[in-house]
Image 1 (tube, helix red, strand yellow):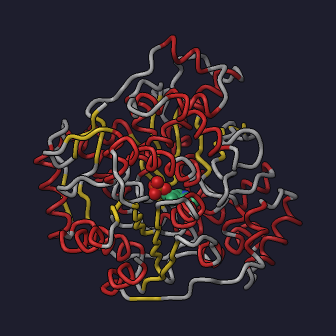
Image 2 (tube, rainbow, N blue to C red):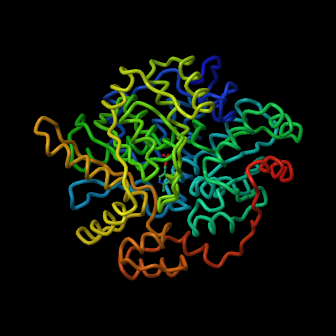
Image 3 (cartoon, rainbow, N blue to C red):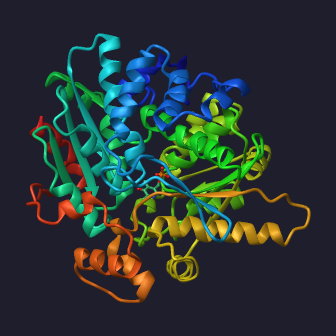
Length: 496
Ligand SMILES: *Cc1c(COP(=O)(O)O)cnc(C)c1O
């Protein structure tokens, strides 16, 4: 399997796509064509466990990796999750399904991929005969950073640096990152929001001078953000697995379409669902849920992507993003894989802050997806109502997705012509990861201290507190540096 850049020119293997992270022309790597899952193979996957199912999917993209070793790596990665299923699917009393992706080491869905990425990357370097150490540079809105830190801490031959927006992450997220162990990692706060962080990181990747300075220090630069195909691929797997769970539990028949509702920020998670669909998974509508930063909802409504707008800090910080990197991969598909057009649009976005779709592209966009957004009050109310009625506590990101999913279902019910499919809501974080906001949603009470919030949520819901949340409480803070975006590269050089 080969990968091509969304902006044309480059064609690489899976190992190269993962090791490079981003194409030399600034584009993102996408599979040259989507591999498909045949009917027989799909049925065989019914009786497999999660790592085996994931291995079936990943092998299609990473043919040059050894299949047995890949399966072993997946088993090892998912052994770090609590419980015996890393992606359990739970039927809710409102008839929807919850796909819980937060049982990993950092209690958010990023673990699904970031526990696997170290293997894909290290093995990729071996395949390519790269001798240098790897330097992973990452911008985070909170969850990627911690998941990458856990995934790569003390991995030999790797150094990892994480930049996060000083005021743009929850207290607990900050504490999780700043108490991280590992001799090879560094965490730095940035004055600004996530977009400022992500832009500065992208600039470093795009600057020959910076890349050379890093290489002069003996490192190969790569990314653990969802622009890296090695992040996306493991995310495709849980859509297949959730579907298979619906079949084996006789909730649906093989072939019935299923809708997925995804709380969206950088567009990585929902893009993986779209890729699963392109691989043949019977997916109906993809529900793209945003918070008050509703640039995507507007894009769906108007066909114009416009980032000149106010940026809001919300209770779902991992979705506080205006420039969703992975959207580039979607518009590449919408344009009929027109690399020139995609490159022009990305240039327009960085120059004038906007681009627009053609009428035909806009139509396609609206056929495959439903987009909606919620206000902070709506999210709070959704979490409260859902807990009161069904006894299930959700985190603030999942609350956004549930609210939009409910609205989508209402809309369909009002329209007798539409077919109603089962809806799977993707739950991206444990409610304990955002304890103050979740407690506020459940009870209207404010607490200053995260761990007081954890305790109260536990008393109220009796939901088990995840071990990683308990563990962070008494760990010393190791990382205290804050810099402005223009000083980020200096920090990189200091660290290396
Ligand atoms: C990262 C994250 C999201 C957004 O996912 P994208 O792939 O960036 O769209 C949603 N919820 C949580 C909890 C996250 O950590």
